[in-house]
Length: 78
Image 1 (cartoon, rainbow, N blue to C red):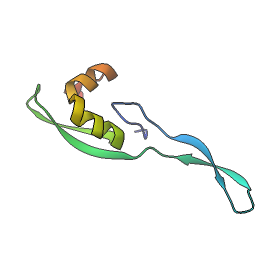
Image 2: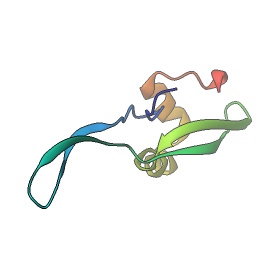
Image 3: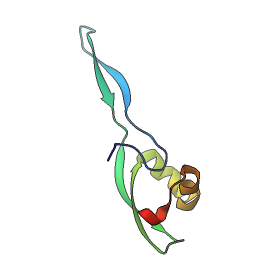
């Protein structure tokens, strides 16, 4: 499975690692992903999702149903 947030779609960013001599080598800046169990009141059960920390913060404010609908995610598959 890819390193991607299931609600927001965040993924790794291409960047450069810059040394003291300013030599630049390519590297990846990974998204801060966490595996989280979220209570889904509509299905009356827990749903296990791989979320970025930004998505977890937004999830507490907006709710899982609204964010899943916007992402086009069917929570019955989780």
